[in-house]
Length: 429
Image (cartoon, rainbow, N blue to C red):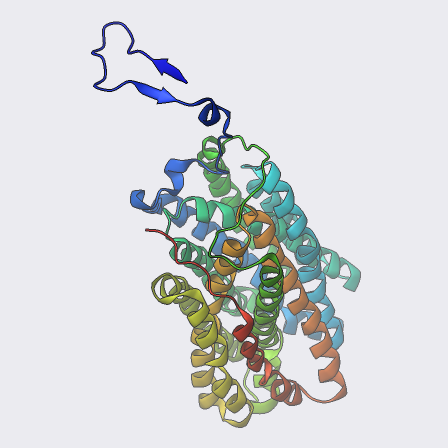
C-alpha cells in the first residue's frame, strides 16, 4: 500500500488516501471522443448539429440532381431504362465500396478536414456532369459525386453522435433531416432551373458545393480539438447484451431491413417521374413536383424516427416504420394520380422513420466502431439499393414501369425479419 500526504500549505484530509498496487496497475480506458462532448447532462451541441445537418442538406441536394435530370439525359442521349439504372449504380457503387473503408480508417485515425476535401469531389463531379456529352463521361461524373458521398457520410455521422449530448437518436434524426430535405429539393431545383435552362445549368449548383466546403472546414476546426488519443485494449461486452453471434445476425437483419427500405425509395426516386408520365400523362415538371412531395414526406419521417426511437425503443420503431408502410405500398399501383400523391406522403412519412433507428441500433451493437458501421449502412446498404435500381431498370425495359411498382410494393414485407433483432440494454440516463 502507498499513503499520500497532503501537499504543503493544504489542510490534511480527514482520512488518508490509500491506493493499492493492484489499482495502480489497472488500465485506464480512454474514450474515443472527449467525455465532455458526449456527457448526457450537457445536452446536444445544437450549433454543430445544425451545421452538419445543413451540410448534409447541401450534399444531398447536389446528389439528388442526378436522378432529377434523368428525363433530360434520357431524351438528349436516347438512353433506355437499363442505362438510367446504370447511372444510379455508378453513383451508388462508388459510395458503397468506399464508405466502409473510410469509416474503418477514421475509426483508427479521425480526419476532421476530410469532409471538406471529399466535398471537392462532388464539386468537380457536378462541373463534369454539366459538360458531359458522352455516356461514359456521365457515368464518371456520377461516380465522382458518389465519391464525395463516401467521404462525407461516415465522418459526419460520427460528428453528429459526438455533438448529441447522449441523445443519439435525436442527433441522428437532425442529421438525417438535412439529407432527406436536400434530397427532396433536387426535383424542385431541376424543375425550376435544369429543365428550362438545360444540362449546362447543373454547373450553377457547384456554388452550393463550394458553400458546403466552407461550412465543413469550419466544423472540422471544431471537431479537431474533440479528438483524443485512443489506447488499444480489449472491449468487453455489456453483461446484459447479446452474444457475438446474435450481434452478427442482427447486423445482417438490419442491412436487409435498410436494403428493403432503400430499394423502395430508390425505385421511386429513379422511376417515379417516368411512372407518372407513362400512366397519367403528366408533364416532366409536374412529375418532379409530385416526386418532391414524396421526398419531402421522407424528410419529415426521417426527423421523427430518431426521437421516437429514443423515447419508445428503436426495435419498436423499426417494426412499425417498415411493416406499417406495407398497406400503402400495396395500394399505390392501383390508385389514380391524386391517390398516388396521397399514398406517397404516407409511405414517405412511415418508411423513412426507420433509418435513424436502424443506424443507431447498429452503432449500439458494435460500440467504438461508429465510423465503420456508419460506412457499412450508408454505403453498402445504399449501394445495394443502387444495384437494385439498375436491376429494376432492366426489368422495366422487358415488362413495364407499372409492373416494377407492383413488384416493389411487396418490399416492406421484409420488415418481418425484425423479429430476429435482440433486445438491447436500456442506456443509463
